[in-house]
Image (cartoon, rainbow, N blue to C red; front, side, top):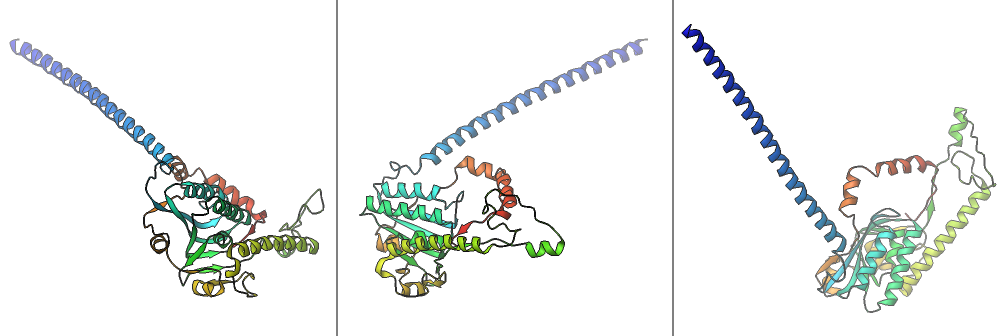
Amino acid sequence: MDNEKKIGIESNINKNNWEKDTLEKVVMFNIRQQQSKHRWGIFFKIFSFILIIYIIFNMFYFSNNKIKIKHTALIDVKNIVQPDTYSSAERIIPALDKAFSSNNSVGVILRINSPGGTPVQASLIYDEIMRLKKIYPSKPLYAVVEEICTSGSYYIASAADKIYVNKSSIVGSIGVLMDNFGFTGLMNKLGIERRLLISGKNKGILDPFSPLDFKQKKYIEKILHDIHKQFIDSVCTGRGNRLKKSPDIFSGIFWTGSQAIELGLVDDYGTVFSVANNVLKQKRIVNYTETDNFSEKFFKKLGVSIGTGLGNVILGIKSNKIKLY
């Protein structure tokens, strides 16, 4: 009997110990959970604070009041000059305005690596450069070509006081083009009938699934010639008597940097650093190029722009864009 009591007591003790241990584990687990939540809460508060500071810094970094030392202003014109790109007029023009209006910029360098773009975007930037040069006559603007400066990007460069190149740079291509595809032959072979309903006899102009109309073709060519003349006039205004007389200059052909110097399309050999050091006499360089802020970079990485890209691809089959490249 005594043994039975002893066993019962030990059993109760073990049970109580197990309950106590379990309770302690549950309590400790909850405490650790609370501590973990507290730590994560502190982390996210610190992260949010840093993020806000970064965004504010990113927004006001290029304020004229922030740059209080003498410097050479640099602006990049890269890739295709068209809307919604790093080299759109929407981005380049504000950068030009800031660079010219800064009390501490001694001059502006356009660093160009672009095959061209749309005539409107190129013309907007060209006109803005010409306007700013009149407002700030003592502040020079130089174009420095690295890899390529053709068509629309040369349109922009021709507004510069001087253009510097590498001997192997590609320069020129002063011309205008519009391209699309015609599928009428393939449709006839496949027995596909095009049913295009329009109001206005020229509404379906350059439709890729309809035969090319001669009168419409001549009309488009007239538009292209008009834009080409605007391009030529702007280049002649910018380059003046530096241009050599040659029937090929405005033919749409392009040249190496060394050939372009001989034709007067550009002025000399040079880099961003040599122009800053030797021409502007200010080796300190501040890049005014407009870039995405943090939120824009973040959402682009998440792929928000995918829908727009797909839409452009789908609708692009009917897109007849006039291009300077």
